[in-house]
Image (cartoon, rainbow, N blue to C red; front, side):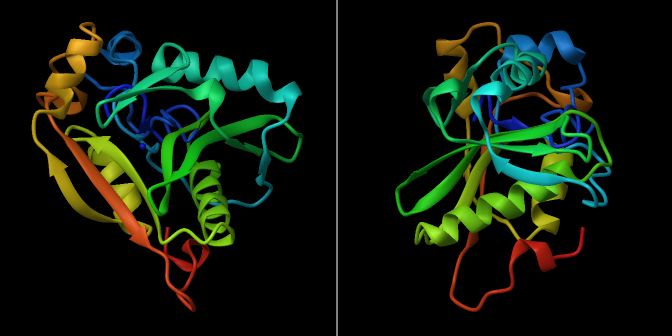
Length: 223
């Protein structure tokens, strides 16, 4: 899901951790996550399962309060730092996942640029609802409709749950930016030195899925 705010924890929070799939940068837990701002695309929460009852749509004005609360819980606020860039999540297009009762189940913030759709933040409110997967599928549809050649995102070296989640859904690691998180600390000194599972937090990994005509969609990949 960069350093500050992309950690999509898909299950931790809302799919969160970003849904935090384990998500919280373990060493330090929620407090460390908030200080870190959110590094990377997030961690999908472990167990992002069935999508039954989950509906995805563009965010509307009445979603703002819930989405803001979700981002505060996940990233400590609306700002994230990823690939040496600081983003304000409030200023980017957002997709929301809602459950059968209309309650927020997750949110995905994205931007179209450089021939692709970048998932800047992916977070879910609770694990196992399938919000993270549903949001990723919807983001792929947006990318295809826009003629984008790829769907991509950045996460951090400690985010093992996110790496598992995204690779199982067809994204591949295409680049490693050694020291990217160390550079991000120059923008945000409160980013912790130790991340999830007590792994030193230092690098960013870029994952992407090439989008080609006739290719099976993310919806058809095993979860």
